[in-house]
Image 1 (cartoon, rainbow, N blue to C red):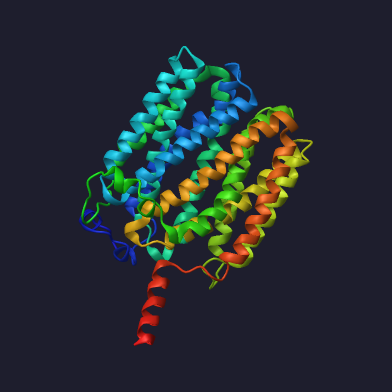
Image 2 (image 1 turned 90 degrees about the vertical axis):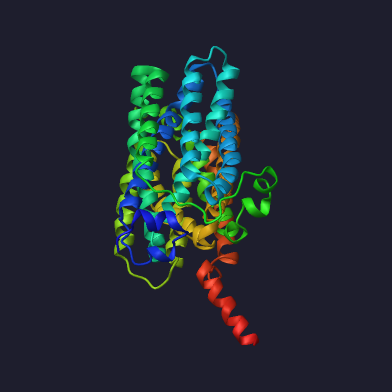
Length: 420
C-alpha cells in the first residue's frame, strides 16, 4: 500500500497504515532526520565531559551539569508532546533546532563558566523539543501490526549513531577542540531541518491554541495508560544510560586509548541482536523469556563494569549491553506507545521521555558524586539494585497483564455487550 501526502495530512491515520510496508518513504525520511539530529546532539555530548574537565570542572561538576541538562530536556518534553498532539509539529521542530544550535554557538564564545552552564541548559530545552517531535512523528509512519519491529529499527539506527559518534567525537575534540565539535553538530542539525521539509507531518483534526492552563494540566500532558512500562524502563535501562555517561572517563582511567569503542562494539552487537530477533517467530507480543534474559544480561553488564580491570572486561560489558538494550528498549517503548490511542501519541512519547529523563538524571547526577567519593566501579555496583527491583516490578505489574489500546477497546466492548 502506497502512502500519499493527502492521506498523511488529512487525519489521524493509524488504521490507514495497516497494510503498508514498514520501510515506506516517510518512515525512511524520519529515521534520517532523527539520525542527523541525534548525531549532532551526541557528537557534543560524548566529549562534553572532556570540555567541562578541561575548563577546570570535576567529575561531580560534569555529572551535575549533565543532570541539569537532562532536567531541562525533561521539562521540554511535556510541552512539546502537547504541541505534537495539538499544534504545528514542523514549526516546533525547527524552532527547537534553532534553540539548540544558537545556544551551542554562544557556549563556544562564552567568557564565563556560569554563562557556559546556563547556555548548556537552554540547549537542553532545544534538544528535548526536537527529539520529542521527531520521535512522536516516527511512530505515525509505522503500521500498527509492525510497531515492535519499527521501534526496534529506530533503536538500532540510534545505536549505530551512538556507535559511530564516540570515537569520531573524542578524536575531533583531541585535534580540534570544542570549536570542531560545534561545527559538526550544527551541520548535522541543519541537515535534519532541511530533510524535515520533505516530510508531511501529521496535523490534528481540530488544532488547539496554546493555553498555559491546558498545557500544564497533568492529565493532558501525560498518558496514564503508558506509565507502568515507562517507569520500569526509566529506573532500569535509562538509569543505566545515565551511569553510562561516565563510560568514556572510566575507560580513560583504565588506560584505554579510545573508550568510544565501547559504544561501537555495543552497536555492532545490537545489529546482530536485531537481525536474530527478526528471524525468531513467536506468538507472544512481548516474549517473557527475552525480557528476563535482557534483565539478566543487564546485571552481568554491571558486574563486569564494577569488577573491570582490563580492556577485555570493558568490551565484554559492551557486548552484554547490546543484548540488554536491543531487547528492553523496543519492548518497553512499544508497550508505551501501544497503550495509548493514536491521537495521544505525543503525550505517550512525553510520558516515556520524562520518566526516562528522571532515570538518566539520577544516573548521571548521583553518579558524579559516587564516582568522586567511591570511584567508577562503585557506581555500576550501586545500579545493580534498582535493575533487580525493576525486574521484580515488571513481573508483578506488567507481565501477562499488559493490553494495547486496541485490546482494551475490544475488552471494554465485550464487557458492555455482556452487561446488556
